[in-house]
Every structure is written in C-alpha cells, then in structure tokens.
Length: 358
Image (tube, rainbow, N blue to C red; front, side, top):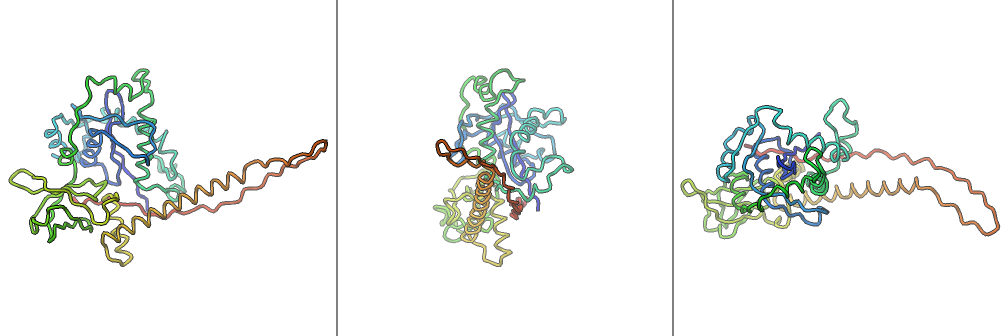
C-alpha cells in the first residue's frame, strides 16, 4: 500500500529562505500550516545525528503571513494564531500568487527527492515500476535528510533572481535587528492540537492507547482537563485546567516507559494497529517494543543493502596484476567476470497513516 508524505513549507518572501517545515502523512490543513509556522518562528537546534555542516539560522515572527486559499485554511485556527501572536494573516485567492512558495518544490524534486530510493515523481504514467518496493525510509529518517539538504544546500545557494548573495546571506543582510524570541510555551498554546481528558486516580491520563503521568496531578483525580500535544512527538502532553474563558497550565505529563523516546501520533496509531492485529495487549511497553523492532528491521535492511553495494563494487573492481620478477616477462590476461545477478529485494513495510480524528 502506497503512503506518501506531505511537506508544508514556510518561505521568507524577501530572501526565499526556507524558514520552517512540517512533514507528515496528514493532508494539508490549517494544523500543518500552524506547525510549520511554529517551526519557522522558533530558533532551531539539531543534534549530531542530523550531520549538519551549517546552522538553520532563520527564525522570527512574520509581519504578514500568506497561506493557500483553500477551505482547510479558512478556519478560525490561523486567524486566532495571528491575533494572539500579532501578525496579519492573508489568504491567496489566485494560483499566480503562490509562486514564491511553489517554485522551491520544483527545485526540491530535482536536487533532493529524485535522488531517494522509492521516488515516484509527479507523473503517474512515468512512475518507476519498482518505486514502491524500493522505498526504505521512515518519516523520521526522511525528515533528517530533508533538514540536512535545506540547511546545508538550499538555503546556502545563490538565487539568480535575488542577486549574488546566498539565500541565507540575503536573509541576514535584510535584518534591521535580531528577531525577538517568543517563548515556546506561548507557541505551544497557539499551535498544537488539543483534546479533553479526565484525570485518573494517581494522576494518570490515557491518550492514544498510552498511559501518562503528570507531577502533582494526583490531586485533580476525576477532573476534566485540556491536553495539548505536538503530533510529531506525543510522549509529552501539556495539561491545562479551564477556568472561565482561560486555560491555566498545570503540568507536563509523560508517557510511562517512553520518556527517552520520540513517538509521533502517526507512529502510535500504526503501532497500536499492528499490535491489535497480532492479538497482543496494547500498552506502553508493547508499543515501545513494536517501535524498536521496526527500527531494528529497517536498520538491518539498510545495512544489508550497503553490504551488497560494497560486494558489487568489489566484484567490478579491476584486478591488480601479479608482481613481476626482474628480467622476467609475464603476460597477464585480464578477464572481466560477469556480475552476479542480484534478486530485487522487496521492502514490505507499511508506513504510518494519519488519522487525527477531528
């Protein structure tokens, strides 16, 4: 079954820098735009696992923010965000107005996506027959590679239409002052999905088949609370109590046994479905075990492919002639071996599907 990721980008209209992204299996919506905007506004820090040579130095609050004019973007969600954060939100009504944000996707396809195994392209008739079988990246691995491409390549390239500066240099040169930092907490309240739950005895909460526990929640047993979460990592929930028209932050709740892990909403739903189909009990531990088994399988699959590449390279490497003794002429015949036929591997991994349930 084919599962394709959707990419939402935030582009600075002055420099054409990519300010922020959101990558998921969810269809475009006001939520995906909000999460990409959140990523664009916040300073970005990435660990060594991303292998970056440059910094993703763009961040800050926009003055004007333009989005697609589709019905999914005409909700009050983005308008509420713009009012609270203090910028003006606009809707594009004509396709010609979207060139700034749509043009980069053509570059992405040429420079980045087309180099990945499993790339299908935009033309269904010309789609490679083996594309789906060759797909081997998880959403998280794809995100790492995409970040590396955007930071080390795309934002560092010169856009001929913008002068002789790189996109990032133009962004820096256009700054009157450094952007103001907005607290992540304020952005969490504005941009993350929310749901209602009841606090159980002992300060526990249940969400998406996972059990959470928050500090000092035991005294609120039986109370209804609002939880906010980032769909990219639901191992941590923000818990709020409604008082009139306001929400008062109570604490963070953490998924038991998953405190050191990352787990997206898509991954949680997919793992729960697999566990259910296997007839096992769904719990924090079983979901953790399923995710680790899947990651191990993918790593072994990738390691096997790398080993085959090395073996094939050795097979085709020209053989060195035998050493020749002094004053002795030896004629060496070179024979090219036929490469061993490699059976195509089938990667039968059904990727995660979104289902936010709104």
